[in-house]
Amino acid sequence: MATKLEAEPRKRGRRGALQVYDVLREEILWLRIAPGSALDELALAARFEVSRTPIREALLLLAGERLVTVLPNRTSIVAPFSLDNAGDYLDTALIISRAVARAAALSGRSEAARLHEQVRRVERAVRADDFEASLKRELEALRHLAELSGNIFLVKFFGEVLDSGIRMRVLHYFPNSTTEERRASVGRLEALHEAVLAGDAEESDRAIERMLLADFTIIIRSLEPRFGARMRLDRVGEGLGAL
Image (tube, rainbow, N blue to C red; front, side, top):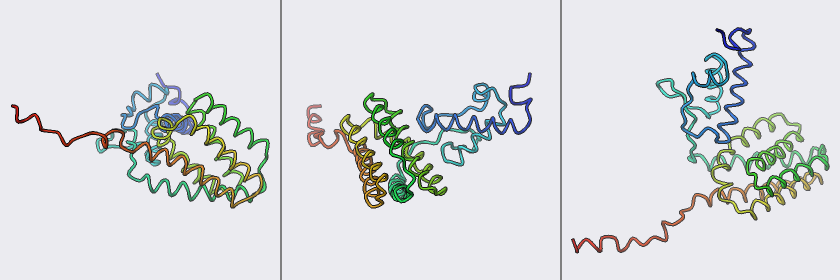
């Protein structure tokens, strides 16, 4: 018996691959599928009710974004999360974010009602301690700034930078930030929006820099030793003489 997409034209199959890609990408970025998890083509085909061809196409697209790793035996796994290029990422995020903030301020396209509502949506999610919703709302607000610039390259590459930082923030920002720090982040987003509304490129630049550096400080803090420096190791072996 043919599956839902096997009996359809090739165009429908391609759409099926993109649908699978969209769902898996979301699940990988938000860690609903853990890094290193195997991605079984047969199981995925059964889940999405498609043949293995759209599954393979979706996995190849994800591999192109380095979200999936194809092993020599052709097994696919979710790419392990690594901080080996975290410094490069933080530099890139700062550079392109500052460009976006300045471009948005100079565009003259911002609308006060929309920017204020975006801040309120982030604030509601933060007050509800809904980490995922608060990050999604913040990402939406930042992507909107790129759209205000009217620059398709900023929209594309800024979107990629934001997506690349999701797993880092889920793993290292939210579990290690305090309630006060998360609420303070809403104030920094509001300050950014006010600068953009005022058309002040310099202050918009400074505002988004403050916003990102505050977040990065928490991420870096999450990597500090928690107890190793407080452990006394100078007495190890004292009891050996009694053996």
